[in-house]
Image (cartoon, rainbow, N blue to C red; front, side, top):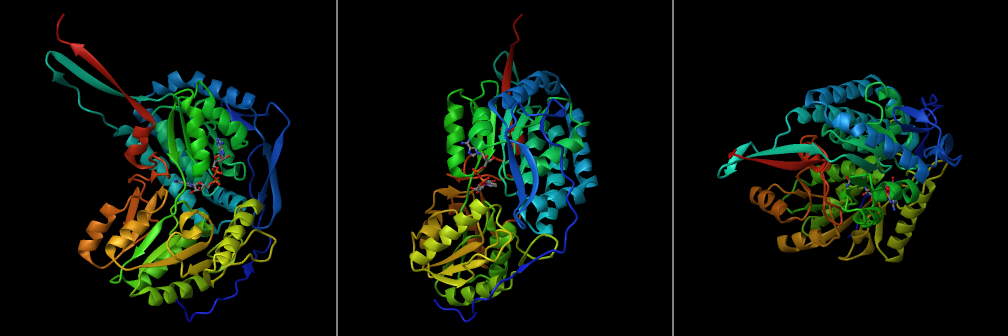
Length: 497
Ligand code: NAD
């Protein structure tokens, strides 16, 4: 397939000196206060768009995790006995505090991730909405009605908190992924210990600073550090009742295997490789715009990114031309420039994405636009479209988690469904069609936790988010998250004396 739109050359727009972000205090947040770590080990956090040093944070130890878990255990009985209305009020105050400090949080998130201000604004708005939704849901959370289901006996089903929840979050949406966990976990009456990504702990620590006076001591604890030490300890700790991770499939597998030794519950939100199925009858311009926005949002560092297009062969040339034109118009730059796309999160991830691009060239695939690193400082990569991709190519199977979209073709509806499902992932997919029958039947046959029709990457806080297959089995957002972070207890009363 050839395209007439020639590859553009991208340049990185640089912000004039941005004001320094407001940084959180140094330390773990344990039992309601920032505390010095047990050891002097630290890690450095940088701004990936400038490679400038931001601050040091503790590289937490097993002892730090144990102290945080002890605080969460001590706080759990009292917090579990609060009423839904009381917990809801706390969640609403957290939402108000995030909203009241949103500019500070947006600037800090952008500085720590290199994401455009529009993405940081969306992250913080969504975090606020998550707390507000969970505040309402906490009060409207129901179980089976009490009743005489067995003769001569009355059943009452309680919804109880699980207890202490360990949470491990990724770097792509640091505060938002923390909010997706903290809000339903607290709403359901649990206490928690959260480990942010070692690359992006700053907004999570800032949140703790902002809300320290609103949440009782020990209910919410933050320990920074690596997955290998802090994440591992949370997964194995005998007093942690459930461990929830948002991250890669490999990390999820390790957490689940470790958690098995103490038979603790596991909540997994893992990677994705979302197919975008474009039928011959689709509005091709809308589909191309949709892939531009959903494939390159957050520089493609997005578990639901529209990264794998399957387009009907009859419209493949037209669609590809439109897509290449859209992607060639993407602007790249540091936060504060108004550019559409920012940097990769780190030097290591920059290297990983570039290695994937080398692999694509080695496979002899066509890079229709982009395909290279951009000049530093900062870990920027060109927005990239790869065409003429055969079934089973590496780019189709592996999550790149960068600004790279591939285009394959198909001949029949059967083939489209089979090829879309031919992946270890099952997080999200989209279908683009103007045909009513197809819009009903195809989503039902796709093995993904979210399927959009004529759209991609639109999230509703009321609707569940989570995957199938290798993408894990937890549900974030919606009432289902409260369900995941609670347990049922059946108490049965005999009518006899
Ligand atoms: P990652 O797996 O490298 O790290 C995620 C978190 O897990 C980090 O806090 C890390 O320190 C921790 N971790 C790593 N190894 C661990 C271990 N052995 N035990 C315990 N914790 C461990 O992922 P990442 O690079 O930060 O994030 C990108 C990945 O996250 C992608 O695969 C992406 O698809 C996925 N993700 C999924 C969703 C979703 O909702 N399904 C959302 C965002 C990101």
